[in-house]
Amino acid sequence: MAFNSDTYHANKYRRIAFEEIAQAKDIKRRAALGQAYDWEIRRIPHLVQNARTSLRLSRIYRSCAELTKARRRL
Image (cartoon, rainbow, N blue to C red):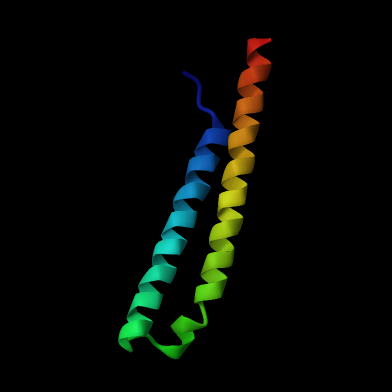
């Protein structure tokens, strides 16, 4: 099977998104315990926004991979 860069990038951006969500959850958990720094708490919205962007990119690459797959069948 040939290397498909679209699926590679889709998986990469999906992984990045879930890592950023995990970081935001960790900061939120530590903030509830009073152990997070102020500058970390301000990063939560930014991390969530980046995660959403990464998930959108993942979906775009996934749809490109599907289109390429359908095109090859023709």
